[in-house]
Image (cartoon, rainbow, N blue to C red; front, side, top):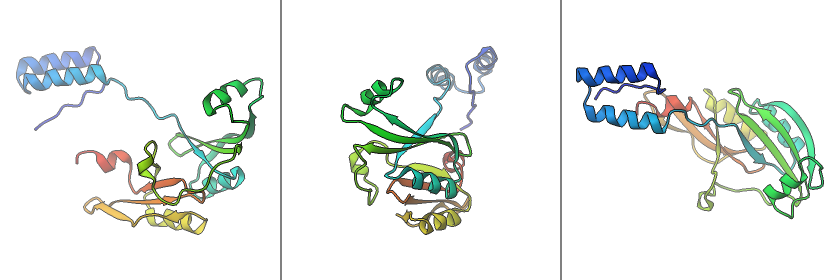
Length: 202
C-alpha cells in the first residue's frame, strides 16, 4: 500500500488532496482518513524538559556532565517554601510538607531540558533497585548513543548499574538498546539510534 505523508493542513495540502481525490490515485476512504488525522493532529507537542531527583545534587551534576555530556544552563540554586517569588507555587506543587530543595537546569545535545532536583526537606527516599513498572507513571528516560557499549562502560565505571543485557532488536540495521541506572537508581535506557530510526517503517 502506498502512503502520502502531509504534515500540515494548509492550502497547498488541501489542493493536493483534492487533486488526489479527483484522479483516483488513492481510495476515497484513505483521503477521508487522512483529512481526519490532519485535523486532529496537526502539530505534535514538544518535550520541554525532564526532571530527575537525586540525593546529592553536586554528585548528580558531575555524573550527568561527565557521563551523559549534559550542559548547565542555569544554577545550581536553592529554593525554599518561604521564597517570596516561588515559595507558594512550590508548596502547591510538592505539598505542604515541602520546605527546601536544590536544583540545576541542564540541556542535552538535542536541546531537551534536564532538571536535577535534590529534595533537602523532606529528603529523598531510598534508591530504586530495578525497573518498578508496577508503580505506573514514568518508567525511564532514554538517550541516544551510537557506541552503546562505550557509554554503558562509562555508566558502570562511575557508579551506575547495568540492568539488562544489550539487545540487538533489529540485526539488519544494528538497532541496539540497554537499560541501566545512574548512581542514584534512576532508570536510563540507551538507544544506539534515534527514536525515528528505531521505529519508523517497521
